[in-house]
Length: 152
Image 1 (tube, one colour):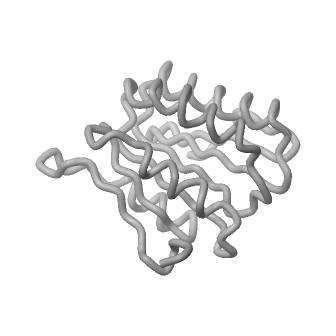
Image 2 (spheres, rainbow, N blue to C red):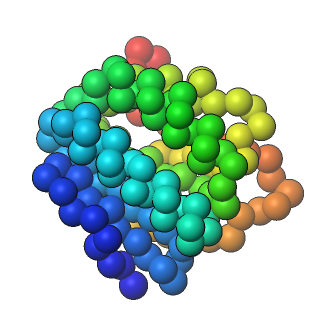
């Protein structure tokens, strides 16, 4: 069951209590304060409710300020790494506007990152993936196709 727990201009946070998934949607030109409030809300849900998966949908995001990107990588990601999170699905723009941001994120992540990170083109595929059990014998993976990466 999908429930909205925060809706702001340009962003929304939904939860699926049955799947233990938090779903963040960012659209358009998101102001820094709104972006940070949205991400902080989602992180609190993960920590307080022991959610195990997240969907980060920025497929309609027009830009992300470099300071917000740094904040996400330097402050939020280390905290997220010490939560119950096991899978993060990312949905990016097919136009490549935000591709470089998340490629940078992948290269920033430590090899011992405790969750899987995978890219998707649609919500249904992302939900299907996060609903599958984690294979405990598999090490953390980062998965994306070369067609999704700029300059390759």
